[in-house]
Length: 407
Image (cartoon, rainbow, N blue to C red; front, side, top):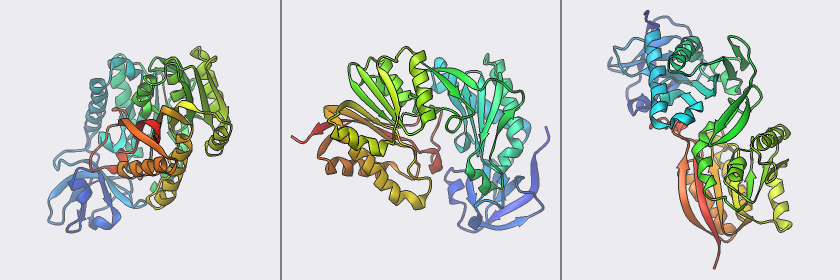
């Protein structure tokens, strides 16, 4: 098959390229010394170190501070449709290896840089694929990759009835791309039935968050089940009711889910109904930060409190304010936990590092005079692999604590 790479050579400055030399995938604009040859933004180019040593190939975009995203570190490897098929095949085989077969019903198949396909995310919801493409160079390769993925899945006994694109994140504008939503190929019913941890959900891939459902918390939700039998549970930022429903199916005596979105609450309520949990699991729309003090003043207390907020920071510059936000929400959540009860708390921002998040939780506990016994620390599920040297691929931090009053 024909090579998709141009003859353009990008040469790095002496001492630069530290990220890709340590295993990452990005080259920034200020690391480049020269570009030799003609190219269009989005083209695949060859990268050389300052001394002419070949470092592989990636796609270039002068619109972005991330000037090159690497596809391969092998200097003699041509970027062809067959190369891309191999990448896709490897990503699928990895999921088949690390996940039980039942969990392949809904999982992330391609996770950008962590699967060496930078800028591309593909989630599988039963027989539907949902795509997010955030890089110009990957936009040029997207259809080749999706055709290969669909063929691989169908030959493996997983027929795909449709593909929907959710490339509507504003960050696309930094790549010179407009946000986009729409079908790739034939139209289909975009309300998709899935099963996760034995719980049925209806996923709206058009209107739901991100690609429609947060798959990264799959096994963290399962871990919550062990704590909840016979317990009174509060699930904050419930979204589609995922943690709440895991608590309910585990036999919680009562579960309350809170979310600011009326749409999310309606979806969560529907999910409780289709799982036969409406008698014990209920949802209401509320601003969580405002509602938790109200519950405290009313004397409400819970055996299990779950905090799964949206990312309080999406940039390094906003981290200081995010620290205040995480500290505040954890203080308010901790005050509602019965002595000997449990707190599950998480951050989904890669700028909130594990060390920083741990420090914030400790500060919150000290402020409200609670003692914490760590039950476990977890991160994103294994279909969202963490690529070392690619910090952006490690974003989810999830703690479970037993909460004790000061004795």
